[in-house]
Image (cartoon, rainbow, N blue to C red; front, side, top):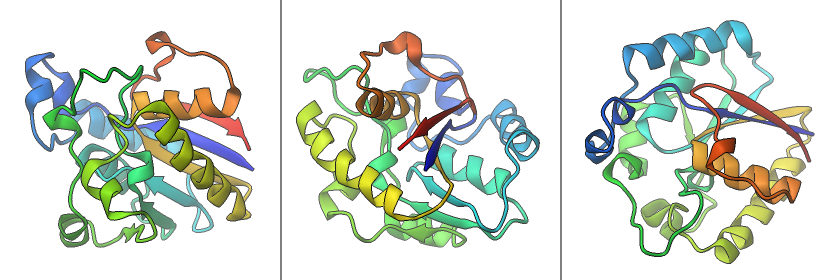
Length: 191
């Protein structure tokens, strides 16, 4: 199976850092909307595709634009929510990286299915500041679940730190912030 990790389009929180990182629930910028539209050409979807999406507005908006008119499966999971990379126990979750509630997602993005198999603490706390060993305890069964979907490919629309964390776990290679993907860039990994 091939996992295709895609970073969301440019969000408002990236416009004027570090101040803009304090924006709670940032939308895509005009550039981010154009990047999401470009995904329609670069990675065209079919009804057979499955997308796993972070419960953050910018990823949900990216997928809504990318998958417009395609009735593929879209599952929202906190297991692909924002994650700091590298981890630092002194850092806390920024306002721009707080997860949307399941209720808000259901109300504003009814075309998505909510992952109701993950523990409630993941929906409230996410994986952002989770210590590396605990992340691994959640990530390994998640990757096994992905593999059990018996698909040729599975798309995961997430964030730079999250993608890099999963890439490091799967590849066993030590990565750095220099390995972060750009907006709407993709990485293919075999499971």
